[in-house]
Length: 472
Ligand code: ADP
Image 1 (spheres, rainbow, N blue to C red):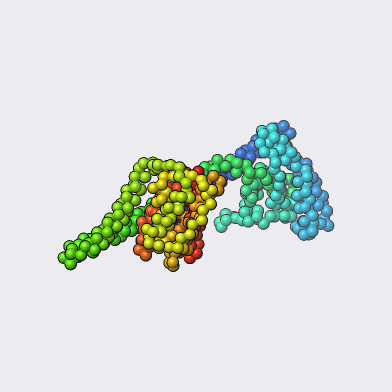
Image 2 (cartoon, rainbow, N blue to C red):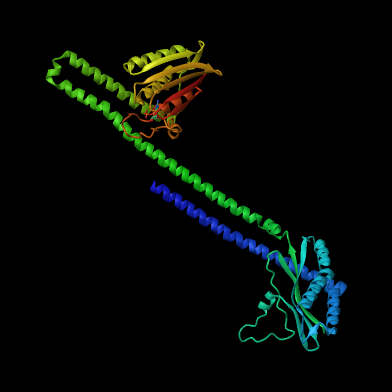
């Protein structure tokens, strides 16, 4: 149990490490593909923009700039709007709204980019986004601030000892926050009336899908390798457990066999010593009784040894049976009657047959062993006076034999294994019920060798019903 848990824990731990490693790798690949996508579109956009500059001699914002400049000029000329070197907050809001609206409505970049992307055969489904970072009016030497985005202000904050940024320095480019956004253009526009910093961004809503498609192969391989490792682990673990179960079964079998062989052997030994005693030697009746006992125990010993030998022979060669057509009802009747006499009326036995006089191809010796094993189990696994009902009938070209007892019953978990070689239900090697775990294995093998099968239905404490079917 301890080893089993350790192996299980170690296996799960290793699989988790593998999954974590694969996740890290996939994440790396994803980020790489994502970055590559951005880079690709940034480069394509730069190319498109320079083409636009060459063809139209514009960066696509000329009209917007013209309108903003005219509006700035108008406001600067209206002295009622400017108090000292500032604008009222309402005017500032109106002005920045106007700037944003004009930038959105009058830009020609998106249309051009879309056409260029289409021409290059790449995804053109983007949404343009314009982010105004700063807008200032310029009244001769005086700067009238209108708008400064908090993010931009933070980024332009001078580091200690750096001093204020110089006029005309390259503006700080905004890094897009969302991963599907690609910064195409960011910069400053300035004339005598205003100074404007803004970014032009394109947002691909299908970017994740594209990246996923490009990562799919690695993702698939990763999942596949995880699946292979998990399946391998499960198969190995199952085999290991199966081997352990078999080795336990074998140990149990050896214990049970030793016990089974010892009983008749010690009886024979004691009987032998008894025969040596002078008072017995003079008593013919006692000699005969002891000789019979020795004979009976020798037969039992022989049966046990044959059983083991036969099983090891079945392992190596095909199960050979010698079938001939027999009236099944007659055979069943004979077997049950001789079992009852053989066990000294050990059980209350009832028989009910409805075979319609059919004949079945049977190996009588093996078939007798099959029925005897079922009957002796019904007697053996009983905690009260055994009552056994034997039923026989035909169904779908098969002879059906049911052996029902009022014994201790079999749990659901044990029912799955009772026909396995050496398997003994939870009584294991506790010798309350003697046995080698071979009886039902025999029954199944014999039924199968006749082209049939055996099943069980049982409830602990309520008895069991074994059903054998043999085609005819
Ligand atoms: P054995 O009797 O030598 O243990 P078998 O192969 O005949 O081996 O039976 C396997 C196990 O099935 C037994 O250990 C017993 O627990 C269970 N079993 C078989 N027949 C019966 C029955 N009629 N009632 C209850 N348990 C049974």
